[in-house]
Image (tube, rainbow, N blue to C red; front, top):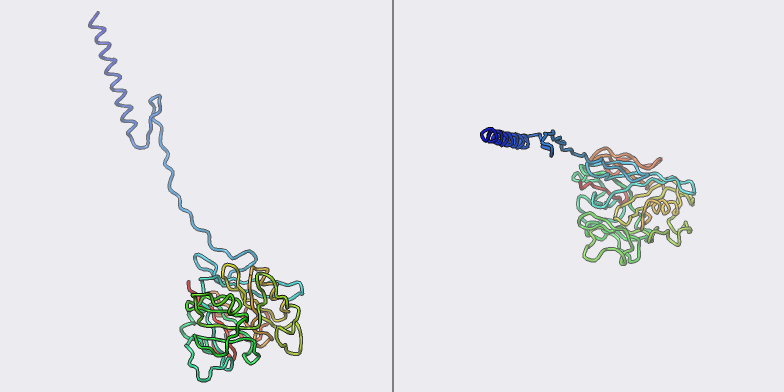
Length: 314
């Protein structure tokens, strides 16, 4: 009797050990887990996933002209104003461009001055592979509307209080009032183009906006003519506005609508208003303003009046 009980105890102990070993081995077996009841359940492995960044898109209401892998670096938009004028706008984001001011072959005067290659009346060979845009400058210097400096050389005396676009050594530009908001202290100007007073200041139109004749003499004395302007928003983006038939208030209102906080009028009348854009650096330029008189490649062959080029930095 005693032997029978001992045998039973021994068999029970052996059975428990074997069961524990089996459960332990199951728990260590890859892809299996042991629940409290001692049974094994498969472990589901979730594969790692990667997300592809969404492609950059233009701002609402704008269309992309040039897009890189990370940003839309040239955008275009058309606005029809309350007066019925069609205004074309081009936006160049701060940091994505270098702005260069060129002298024309006849204005501003350059006699006795040696300008850098990227300041002359023809777009230079070094600029061409980077070119994404070009647009006209301001009034003739003989009108007394403001001064001009290119490459550190003053070609027409700069006037305090004038609306000015100031370009630094890195090609970054700021629009403001010369001697007040520009140049920025510690960031000296390399090139400056002045023209009249500000068209937009502090996000509102100039108090003299309705005095159309104060914004330049027009061909035939007409009020709505070809006009252009250069604005800037709070982020530092440059915005060019141009139309083949507009009042000063049309340019100002269109620029304010797209976020410009400051703006200056540039040249006016059909022969001089021009905006050209390229979808890739060095690619073919396309005339951006419907009905513009000058061909899109005008500045590549040279021009009589000053103009700006926009060069891609990324």
